[in-house]
Image: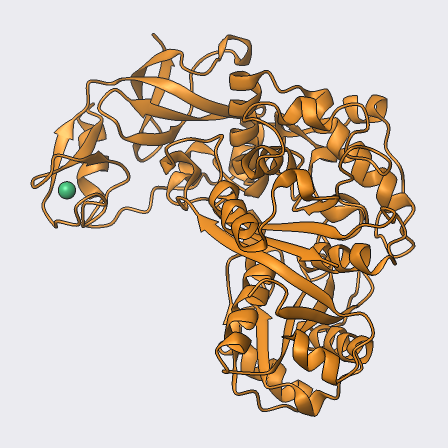
Length: 374
Length: 131
Ligand SMILES: [Zn+2]
């Protein structure tokens, strides 16, 4: 099914503080813009895949969004894989379309942890709050420490990922944080949970983003302007608790990436630009290893000396990623992956014909991969 | 002083907390396949048999990784900052979240540790010191 399904349109709200906006309203705005971008009437939409909003629990939230959109999808609902959800939903939409379960799908996310509640991000992990074990950054710090001790990965190498993201974000008019960062500034960034520092941690943002998925054939018959073919996708999972997984330094990106590359008939050397989920700097570093862009333990050396900045060997997170564009988990990376193939990024890789995107949820628990191409 | 979190004691994990009161660190072992694990659960995650038994640990293990908190996510830990949280693997196999009773500069992965059960206000916790 390589290339048989396309992303026909993309849309998003502003990023940052959006007080007084409900997640439903932001989902509707993102979907309205994605439909307009594709040139598709909402009446054609018969699939609706919605990410679970972390800031507010509402039963059957997918149906609430469908009602606000004024549509009656044949297939739809809410999916929850944390930050891995968006690419996973795109792949479920693609499979549903291939199987004739729907024809035109909207895949959408909206959340407001910045001005609403962020309880989901601050809870204790399991029963271990008695030891002071709280929060998402600590889980990533536990993994980062092991990687640094096992392979000699340095703070400066983690910093190179933040520096690249902030450089790219500074040149993206839509980015929430447009202040570039130097390695010197990174070095004095205050510790949050060591070994992670403030500038290793992603933004917390309100916002919404959506894409329209359909068959390439349908896109041709509808004369969609800039449909971007999906070449491959994959997913993978490991233990829920960090303490329970066999290795802290190998992630589900390995199986997810392998599945996606096999489907696309491509290898890492064929990829020209990558959007790698960067909730914390350690995440893209290990994703590069597990995808096979370099050997296990070599991720630190891979990202040094501007290699992942625009103009480098493999530009990564060219819109600024979660560290600079928006902390909204994952769909913005997909949209930037689409822009790179369309040639419309503010940090365009000239002539890019292959574009890889990763999403990741939990403490490196769930991973999903998307490969787009011209 | 802010209230500290307390363990969520359930019928399933109660033997773990009761053993700590006696000064013993325990883990579960499957009566069917011999698999060993923490935290407590009703079924063996390896063979799915519902025959968990409790066994006293040697108390020896090694550090898998650790972090150091510089801000308190819970007000009860504010006066302990900075403090560490570690993953320790027991010699018998189960892994647990814990604290290491040592200076941060002395910590390292794979270092051997030994359990030291410490009394908190209303319960006891298995922490570890460098062996
Ligand atoms: Zn068993």
